[in-house]
Amino acid sequence: MHTGTRLLTGHFKSRGGLPSGMSEKVDFPSNQSSGTEVITDGFFEREVYLSGSETAALLRTLADALEEGEGLTISGDDWEIPFEYAEPIEVEVEFSNRSGRELEIELEFEEPEADGETFSVE
Image (cartoon, one colour):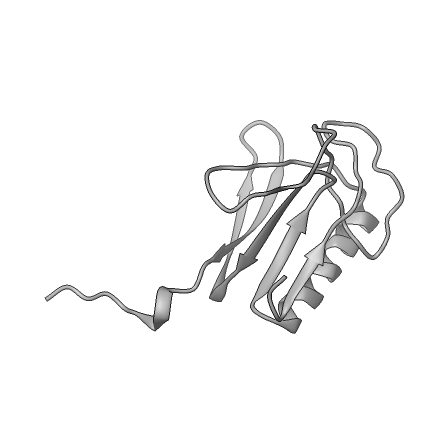
C-alpha cells in the first residue's frame, strides 16, 4: 500500500438486500470465492444500497482517507482498487425529476500527471 493511502473495506449485499452491520471499514459485495483481484486497468463498477447511517459512515471514512493523503484503496472480499489521485477532486451534483425525484452526488478522482508534466498547444 502507498504512503498516505487508506484502505476502505466492508460487507454489504447489493441490489436491494439489507446491508449487514457497519464498522469502521466499508466493504462491498463479492461475486467470486478465491483470491483478491487487484484492479488497476480496464473497467470495474460496483453498486451497493446502504442506509442513511451506513452512507454517513462510508463518507466519514472516505473523508478521513482524503485528509490523510493523496491515495486510497477501495476493496471488497475478492477485489481491491488502489488509487493515487491529484487535486482538485471533481464534485458533481445532479438533480432530476423526470421519472421520480432523484439527487445524485458524484466524486471523480483523477490520477496525477506523470512527473508533473503538462501539455500545451502552440
